[in-house]
Length: 103
Image 1: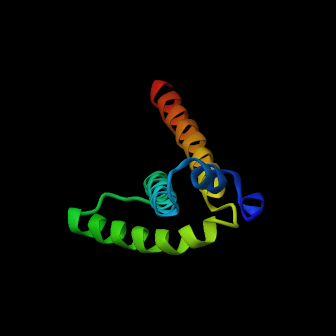
Image 2 (image 1 turned 30 degrees about the vertical axis):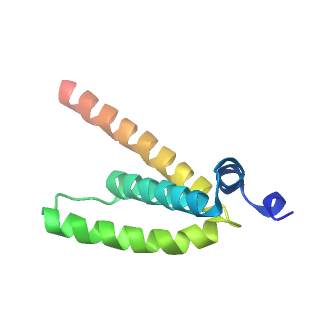
């Protein structure tokens, strides 16, 4: 009954993985990886390793909070859409730079 109110990614993980702990860990991993991708595509600058490490820790801590919210809210889906938009933006930016360099 609870599965019906979950969003698709969380429902898929909780229904297919053998235990709730494994599903929660997988959901945390998905959220963390998508958060890193969105950060790298949209906000990252060249930083020293230790600063990137600290940012990664904060992304992981935020991922714990988002994991609890992702059970009944579209967190993973929102991160996927954000990543897709940023990928399209980076492709367009790359094409414009290539065209400007050619002319």
